[in-house]
Amino acid sequence: MVARLTSRQFAPENCPLLVVKVGSSLLVEEGGNLRSAWLSTLVDDISGRHKAGQRIIVVTSGAIALGARKLALPRGGRASLADAQAAAAAGQILLSSSWADLLGEGDMAAAQLLVTLDDLEDRRRYLNIAATLDRLLGLGAIPVVNENDSVATQEIRFGDNDRLAARIAQAAAASGVILLSDVDGLYDRNPSAEGAEILPFVERIDDDIRAMASGSAISGMGSGGMQSKLEAAQIAGLAGVNMAIISGKEDHPLAAFDTCNTGTIFAAEESRGARKNWLGGRLTAKGRIFVDRGACDALGRGNSLLPAGAISVEGDFIRGDVVDIMHDGRAIARGLSEYGVDDALAVCGKQSSELESILGAVPRKVLVHRDQLVML
Image (cartoon, rainbow, N blue to C red; front, top):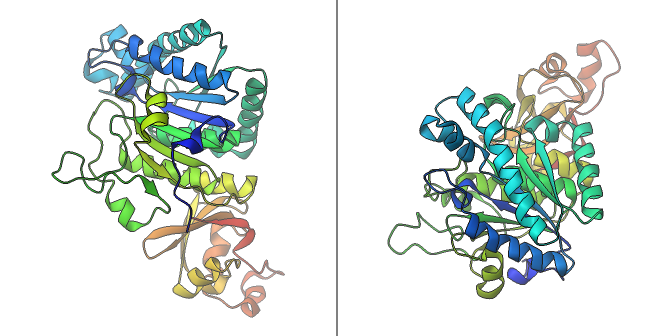
């Protein structure tokens, strides 16, 4: 049983590095104008924490919404992928300059970082981002991060900044993530339903918790919902990072969280090392290996995945690619395959003693080694 966490877990004295995510519905009015007065109060909160010694990374949405107004695009710039990319290109200038101006008024240097999904899924680029963030933070800057929507396509994009915030927290080795939302936490049902109650603390995300995420987002302006926030909590948790969902509707939202402790806090799991954290936080995989109950139990005990426990394989992957390990309709683990897809198919369900005769060479004994595998 994990001790119940409070907002003090995210205070400067307990959280040396904090990631704060701000969504479109909070930053931009329905007409497409920036909520400058509100943003000033958030920057005041950030300034107070910065002066108290807390390093802070901001993950910000809003470029598409701002650019759509600038270019007079319909449907908030989301009528097509081309419109969204154009709106993002125009809006990112407005968004980054607003952050730079407001942070500058508080004697804080802003540094813009635009990333795509591939930047964090590729191990080498992921490490480069981590190094850049570390250097910027060491120089006292406030990195302001957004998805590079002007070049991202539907197939290679996060689609929301909740999961991006969790991945950035993972790369930067942050201590906490705060998602500022249009709802003040995870409710046991739709917040508008009679009798809905907020969950102040979630120790582990299970099927019951996932069932509560349906229909919880109410703004419609951004691309994320409560489901994406749960996915972010899982990514952060696997990396040993606590995460909170709190309301950003009122002025000074971080100060209000300190005072009122209202929101939902998701407890971190024990960190499993940098490489396994990266694996657990990935959002894409090249293939899937379906396993039986015995293999599922063995993986849970810390064992490698043997060919005998595999039922079937799908996808297009080579040795060293990331694969999801599936059981009972969901991914239970993720790891680096020791085989390409053709050989993996050939040895599914086979005993170790049979592998050499099937492959015609001295085979690797496991499909996925435990040192290259993380449970989800």
